[in-house]
Length: 217
Image 1 (spheres, rainbow, N blue to C red):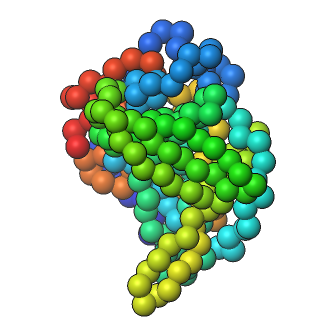
Image 2 (cartoon, helix red, strand yellow):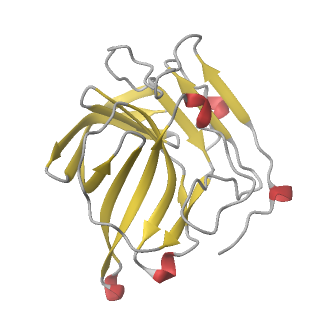
């Protein structure tokens, strides 16, 4: 698995957080206010690592409202070991979700049935602003605990057949963790958000607009 050369990274952290808006209880900064595009905006070139490992069956569970950050990815496929996946964040509140990680993201509803979780987008977000209505759905097997949300997906690789991957999201204590990146990457599954590109940046906003200049995609 490749290792991070920290000397090649130039980091720009922009924390545009409205005073008193970041949650202090598991990152839920909503206080019952409905999610919107500007509830949580993350824009970054940072990436997480994929690990070849045994992928557990989904177990369901109660999803705790809060702000989650992708921590690592697990894959049944050996060739995926060391592959990089874009860092993303999800806020879940009152049966709705806000997904973010690049200049565009989604807002919509989240429902569960047994061990299946379905995200249905109703709105497309460009940075912190709505870009109009959109309709799309994604269904995953899921496992939820008080601190983690694991989304299990089936990947098709043509002649390689199909295999399962799990994206592991960690519930944050506050949005301040969004751009807390590692200078090294563990060799076994664990928090692996790091910068690999020389022009890497990480910017976020909570309950306020993220400026275009903070997201040079």
